[in-house]
Image (cartoon, rainbow, N blue to C red; front, top):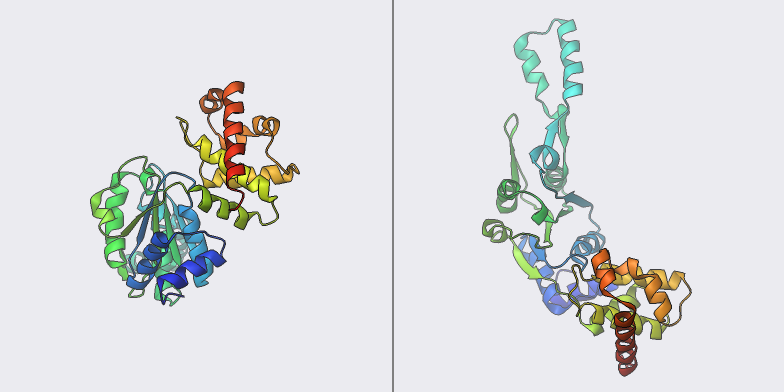
Length: 303
């Protein structure tokens, strides 16, 4: 599977992930060189899905660290099980153990609770490297970025009470960012980089067909054309591929065979998540958008 870029692209397609050659090349090099892959782009364009697909392709566990403001080492790496330590301490006291013995017991591996980063290192040491997804790193603080540098450089973590834990067989690391803020160069330098943009009409249509193989061909083209037209507007949040697929599933669930103006108006909340964006689509604007989408879909009947 990791023999060539073509084999990676084919494997991704077999998992219903439509990837252009540039992305397949980035994935191939990440696997071949053992370097983290930093994926950046708008929300909903398929960055997180890459990690899920790689997990299936490699038959490896997926370990996900969802980033957020205030994320720290205790949540991402490890923490001590204080309740268990306290219980053990009382048992040691009851048995008459000395102070030195009690201290040595308290900070042993048995009381350490592994969090996603340490879980990935330990699984790799055990010979089963997982896919480690560090999702939406731009939501975390800059201090947490600095904390990640040791992991991404040397695939090791340091626990003061136990020392350094290192693996020579690194996990597959995917780092994603929605670019709500710039990520520091020091982190990016430790990764291969790839920007995932909104897909072209042809690519998005292939994605819709791959994820909804039983959809009416005309409806698939009209959905794709409408989303493509919608992204041309000055929206607060343009719909991503995730919204396209949610909308496809919704229209199929409603037994639609073609995209009517009424059903578009009734299901806008599936693809637009801000009321200001919905309000922008007045009845006249929505009708014009719908008409342009129908014309575009008609023009590409051969696709």
